[in-house]
Image: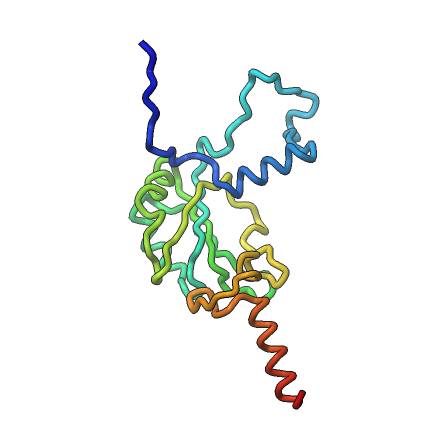
Amino acid sequence: MSSGIQSTVERLDKPSAYYLGKQNKKRKYGRDRDDDNVGHQRTPEEPPEDPLKDATTLYVGNLSFYTTEEQIHELFCKCGEIKRLVMGLDRFHKTPCGFCFVEYYNHQDALDCMKYIGGTKLDERIIRTDLDPGFQEGRQYGRGKSGGQVRDEYRDEYDPGRGGYGRAIAEERQKEEEEYGRGR
């Protein structure tokens, strides 16, 4: 008897799109070997080690720039005891830029958080949660050219929760206002 039934439920502990893209880049450029396994070639039958299998850290995205650590702690502690909370900061201004990392003491609390809190509203914004392989120093800063998140550089709509217009649009408007003030 064959089992032709497929599950319609998505796994919660699957890698995020960001993480999968990062892994694909490593494979593309031949950097998929671990430092401790130098010289060890993985056989085709041997599956790659899943770093998210026991992950206790969550990446939380789409936060308002005005959301505080206290608000995040209050919401996320409902799923388990929080070990550490790291706010994402603008690299140059050291102001919040719309993401954070929440680290729990065990994997099940992180999964529960994804299940119950991911997709809910905080400060009138629907937040996004993904398992993360673990926070490392330096990841708390945005990777965009202006110091914030890359996505904010190309946003062209007005979003008061993320600080107004995108950086490119704001710079363009500032330049137009300066030219107008000079009488051009």
